[in-house]
Image (tube, rainbow, N blue to C red; front, side, top):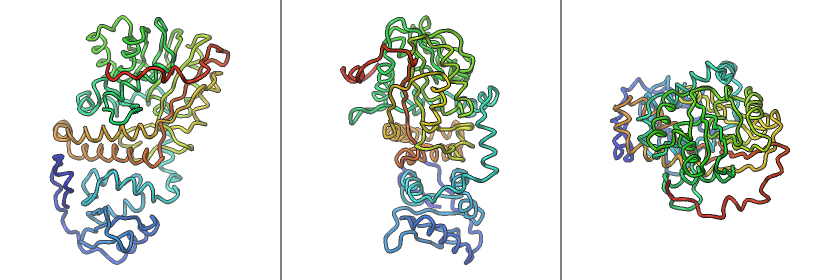
Length: 425
């Protein structure tokens, strides 16, 4: 299969020409035509393994051309496109020979029929078992994604190692500037004051905890069950002279101990699972002071629906982006009042575009660390995520909350926007 010009420029490994596996049969072509009909004839042409082309949108030159290497790949992607496309692309059995992968996945999102495939019993059972996210399962899930090597993530994240949605309030901001703006935006929403005791649930590589301690004079206790991330965070805190103000704990959020003025969680809720939301609410209720406040930042959806099955299976096991009404189980169980909800969906699309560009710029090193299948799987993951946020399949919620009896609350949002955001930190 031939490569696109953009793949050649970014150093992608040559895609070998697949062997011709016999001629396609009439029913192969009928199945493909029926699938394109069900998608509403998108601007896409598909080439079968014998060179036969089937065009989607009639009367126009397709801007996207896809090649399928064998009959098993055709049947797999037609029977279960959500679950099989990622694997078949990673294996090189489906190849985009003209156009960009983000454009292809955006087109498929926009033309996808109603999601009857979500009701498949085997898939539903697998998701139910993984989303239980007990202590042992949660550790396995986090290890699968986050403990694959700090070197890999450092290739395409910013210096603060922020692996969550950045904030782009001004056009032309760099990823570095936008990640600092995100941390500052969160600190302002939390109205941090010197001496505040802050607990962070799921701290990643610890960048937000260090930012809060350095710029707001607070004391942070940050929990995380990824061993590699905690080791990295502790080393950075020592290097930056913050070890006396930031304490990283390698433990689960359910085991949070102590009393705090502020609770914050950025990018962890996706791994908690709705069954555990009342438990998380009880943890917040247990640890917050009478005038405590908090913020939860999470990928979400407009209505309850499971994570994309391929991403859940290959990239983020146990993940579930909640709808707002699912998130309310946290606040209702903890007797908490929601003060503010902001949706940063388009900011996450822009963040992901930066990540994908940096990933592709370092693709040769990524391939040297892992292999070509890994490169292609992460290309699908990042590209598909861009498409999902662009099309509104995914949202990004920041929810600010406080004790229901807390009357020391701002009367407007002026504290968020009064001063310009810092450009670096």
